[in-house]
Image (spheres, rainbow, N blue to C red):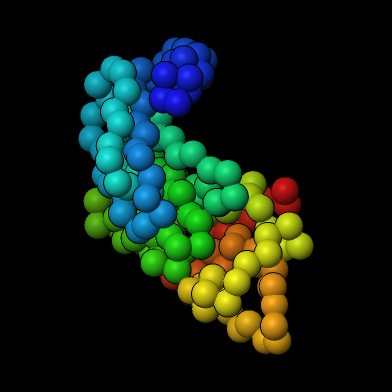
Length: 172
């Protein structure tokens, strides 16, 4: 399967000639967010992480999503970014808080200086979940279910609680 996907990634990377470095991880639906320094040309593939952050120009951060939410965090004044893979497990584990904390610790950005965008993902009537998922993200699960969940709304609430200055959510 990797042999099938890698040529697509290489073609994708070639579309960014001013961005020689790309970072991707084998995601585990957790809350581990890594800081990346430098922009050594080529691919960096890391085991067991669901988020990346950097202030290095020329480093492309990548996550893969299907039903999960790509979360973009930007600290514009400090010229730093984080990209998070937030499924229900990562959302429940606090991956957004980890990303905010990492940007704060590494580049001194306060949450109020950050911008957060919860990207395109499965949601609402299209995303039926069980009681364990609802409980995991702190939602009530009345009745017999199944229940519908929009993880992006959970992330937006978490962002507000964290004090993030600007929060947007994809309508798709």
